[in-house]
Length: 461
Image (cartoon, rainbow, N blue to C red; front, side):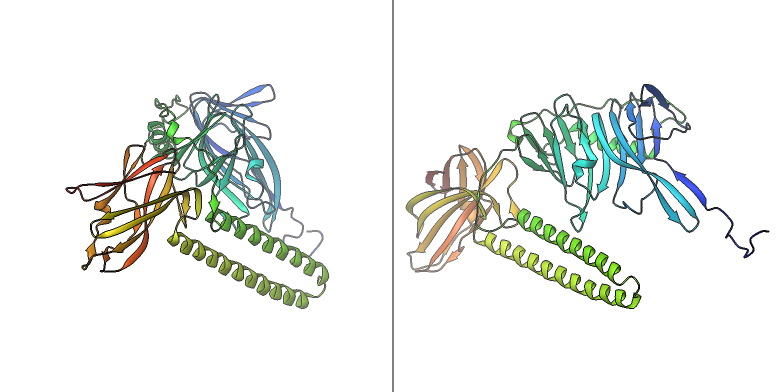
C-alpha cells in the first residue's frame, strides 16, 4: 500500500445524491422544454429547475425536497397537486460536506401555482412572496403566516385553488392580503375567496362548504392510499362537489377606526420587528468577534458568552415590555372599545321601574381589548348612568330585560356593565354591549321583562 499511514487517508469520500421525491396516482406528467415526460409509479424521473408539473385526472403527491441544506435550513417544501392542476418549480442543487462523504441535495426554492388545486406546506427565511407565487392570471395575494422562528422563518400551510378569476384559500393559519385592493382576511376556520375586486371570508363552522370538506377528507385518502389502486391505475377526483356560492355578507370591507390604544396586531408586529433587529445585531457582533479573536480562542469564547448574556437580557426586556402592553390592552378593553368606528350622542332619560336611566351616547367599533369583532359585525356600546330613587334595592336580570333591534333585526345582549342589585339612593355608570351587522344604522333598545310592558330607546349611529 503506497503512501503509508494506513486508514482512510487515501480513500475518496462517498458522494450521495438526494433529488426531489414524489409519488403519483393516475395520469400526470412533466413538461421540460418541448418534451413531455410521463410520471408513473415505479418510474424514476428527477425533477429539475424550470419543470412544469401537470396533472390530468391524477395526483402528484408527497412532493418534497431531497435533503436539508446547511446554508438554507429554513427552505423546506411539501406539496400535493390535485387533478387538472399545473405548477412550475425552481430547483437549487446544493452540497453538504459530511464526515462520511459529500451530500448533493435538491431544494425547491420557488413554486408558481399556475392553475388548479394544491395543498402546500412551505417555509423560508425570505419573503413568502419570493417562494410562493400565484399565476398572473388570478388575483394576487400576500400570505402572512402566524408561525415563525423569532418572526423570521416564515411557515405557510394552506389549501389553495386557482380558477379563472378567483383564488380560494382554506386551512391556513395567518392572514391573506389582496394586493390590488389592500384588504386582508384571517385564515384559521375561514374559507377565503379573492376575486378581481373583492375579498370574502366565510366562517366554515357556521356555513360549511361541501368542497372544502371533501378536499380535507381526500387528503387522508391520498396519503394512506386506502382507496388508490395498486399499480398505475386510473386517476379521478372522486366527483368533487363545487364550492358554495360567494355570500355578499362575507365581503371584507375597509373599516377605518380610531384607536384608544395599540391593537394586538400592532403590538405583535412591533415585537417581532425589534426581536429580528436584536437577532441581526447579535449575528453581526458574533461575526466581528470571530474576525477579531480568530487566533485567540479563549478571548473569542469570553466575548461570545458576554454577547449571549447581553442578547438574552435584551430579549427578556422586550418580552416584558410586550407583556406590559398586552396587559394595557386588556385593561383598556375593560373600559370600552379600543378601535372605534363611530360615536353618536343619545342624551335621553327614562324611568324604568324605580331606576332613572340617563343614556348618554353610543359607540360602535371593531375591537375591544383582545377581542376582535367577526367580519361583517361591529360592537355597539350604549352608555348610561342609573340612579335608584326608591327606598329598596332594585334587582336586574340584564339578559332578560334588555334587547336590541338593529334595522329591525332582533339581537340579544352580548355583554354589559350594570349593577344587578342597585341599593337605595345609589347610582351606577355602565353600558350595554351588542354585536350588530356593520351595515345597521337605526337601533331600538327594548327594555322590559318578557311578560311586562316594554319601553323603547330609539337612536341612530
